[in-house]
Length: 520
Image (tube, rainbow, N blue to C red; front, side, top):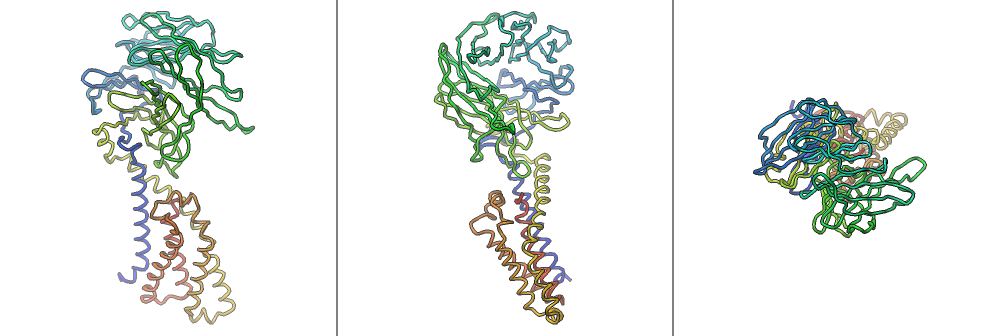
């Protein structure tokens, strides 16, 4: 009984083995670290919005991470290994417009139109702009910029905005917080830089620049160190009547009092030969001889179905001459956004966007203990790997349709023999089987490029995509199928038509389960 069932059991066992091998490869892709020596993403919590978390360093290397939940603002305290030490939640109303900051020990939140005290819900002021920093809060109202006193929460006017269309960008370093204002007229973009000094601002310098007439500024970031500043300008250009948009990026480093000399830069994808697209959510820091950027970008990942690109978190180092070095800090199948850098732990924290407002607050780090935590098996990784495997296998069934170009010819041959030499069919002449087999294999070799496409060979693992692998596997599967068939003929009295059908069917199945998942 076992011998008789082997002719059917063997193809099934081989197919299951191929699926397990595909699952193992997908598990390896899903669990691939973003960069060598960097941890996989670790979930810290859930948030209903895509809002940048607030980080604050404490004594003894501890870290406060504040983020929005459905109930309000949650503040988690972690030790150096990101083990939870304590947690607390301050209830506030939360929707997609909610932002928050800490003004000293006081929680301040905004609903886009006004700001409130977190604990009491008391309204402090109507606003036109909200600028949260680590330990202080700025807001604009009626062409005036205010800072909240960290003790009394009284508003302190620190700047008059003479032009109602003035755009404000705020950044901070370990030393101070800085403001950049931008106004636009027919002569170009006009920038002013300020340093916040207590309850007033000190003007550091002015700068003017223009971009090409076919481009418009999409984002403008800056950083300050000593007597110099750096700019990163993101622009959009409409390339065609169809409305296709292209991003360009420009960098400049200048001393205060000098206009920026913008030079175009690119962000190469460290995991493909392409460039990162749609770079945004930029956090910019000036070092001694370089500028560090933390941002989200649209780039290569193997964690998604069909290995399609996705938004992940990257860190770029720009030399003051404009040379760019990029590494990836996250590698997840969900769109990643709003990254924040924590220097003390060599870590990045960001938001992975999910469905039904169930976004994940994620962490990755170069800390060995965090790398060890990230390497642990979890349910999400298993489900991602299984889902990718099922999806690839399902679309791989399309290869059976393509294989129709192979088996249609031996079927024509059988039809011709049936009507022209029915006696040979009735007597199960072996030459019919061998001729049909040769016709099938000849068609498979002749039309193999329709199955083994350039895309398939690029996506398939090395053991399937080496030089000449398509021919080797076609003949290898044919030999294996023939051996199984030869064994089956001894145990069964099969007609020549059944033998040929078995040979073609099993051969197509083997090609489908091994190569089909990489076809689309």
